[in-house]
Image (cartoon, rainbow, N blue to C red):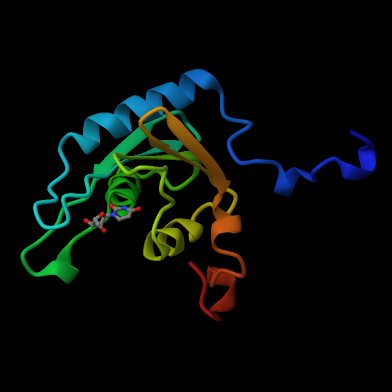
Length: 152
Ligand code: THU
């Protein structure tokens, strides 16, 4: 491949910088969380794991509710746990489902995550299949804190 056609850093496939051991640790945490999913309405069980830049791992599962809109996605569950523990910088998000093909995070979760790490590597696993993205490619032109006059 010529230098001209090398992908730029921001356009390399996501997660190529994530080491295998970290990925395996996050997948294991997401699988454990998935086993705790409370999804009696959709029966779509999701586990997620966010890896902090300090190596910490925060897991979440989807938690549904009889009042359907009060349900929470696995990714946002993991994010809430991380922020509550004081971690806001992440290297990797792993999502685990039993879907027929790996599924990306929903729009609401993309927005929640882009607040903290637009370049986040996202790896979705279903069975033996895996897909990888970079968060900002899943949510281009995202609304960001800098769009507000008052910033955090
Ligand atoms: N869900 C997640 O937890 N994460 C996703 O990325 C997609 C959807 C949940 C929400 C709901 O409990 C069920 O999966 C079906 O949409």
